[in-house]
Amino acid sequence: MKFFLDTANIEEIKKANDWGLLDGVTTNPTLVAKTGKPFLKVAEEIIKILGPERPVSLEVVATDYNGMVNQARELAKLGPNVAVKIPMTPEGIKAVKTLTKEGIKTNVTLVFSPMQALLAAKAGATYVSPFVGRLDDISMEGMKLIEEIVAIYSAYGFTTKIIVASVRHPEHVRQAALLGADIATVPFGVLEKLFKHPLTDIGLERFLKDWNSLPEDFKPKFLK
Ligand code: E4P
Image 1: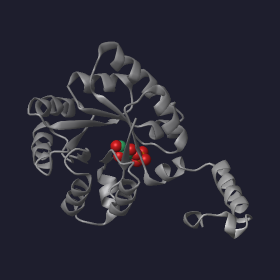
Image 2: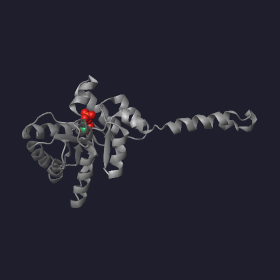
Image 3: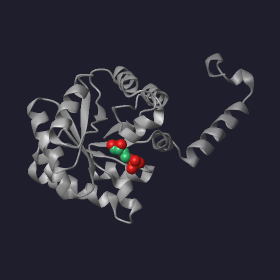
Image 4: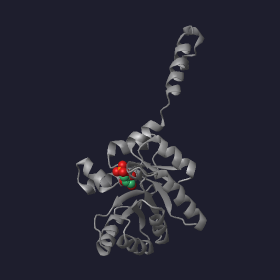
């Protein structure tokens, strides 16, 4: 399973990249606004860090077909790794169809039902982003949506990749992995939490304490 970072924060992206755990980045207008920096500056910096292979999702803000297609074409010019986020609307799906024909990668966003995911796949979207956390927020079962999309896509052999989005905690990531989702896009805080287990901390402390109790001349120089 691939890990994308759901952020426009450059420091977070650099850290995840240093850990060797960064397969891609997803942004949205809210995340870009949070940086307090101009859009192009942020987008170009992220694209540069990710290089030509790893995808960066950048979102259109038009809502009509022509506007979305024009904005998507401009966004795609920013780099070969740009996947254009298009909202899940009839105009959006029509735009995805056009952009797919032009070879522009798309990520259909704001997906909350299996039927919406089916439409995205039928339009040829590169990625679909079902939002699990926002479903949980309204007392629905976000991960059930992923289960159903996985089943539908595999029944028909759709190649659209499922990005589990609106991830709130490591449990979402665990369930996404068990369900065979292609990608989880996670906030930096969730990525950090994936490393953590109290028994790891206790175990490491104990190993080091026991090692340090050895006489100094028992330890080779390179293990001091
Ligand atoms: C997905 O691509 C979105 O950027 C994101 O996951 C939305 O998450 P939120 O519900 O935490 O805002």
